[in-house]
Length: 97
Image (tube, rainbow, N blue to C red):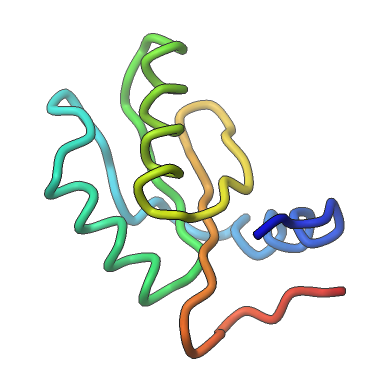
């Protein structure tokens, strides 16, 4: 699924007031973290993840792995916060055309 620029802007606006629901720390991207991200995406559709890693390359690798494993769409990465979107079966967020 690809999002248009208008849809991404809409999701960024929706995510603005959200707090990160998953934090990735020194243990990195584990199976437990993946399970929590899956649960949060199924429940909320739009989530933020805080990645507490100093190295930019490592942070980007973790972001790519999360997107690949969850099948979600990376809306934006600002600093250490990644915003993800994945529509659920009962769509809660209606995207503009």
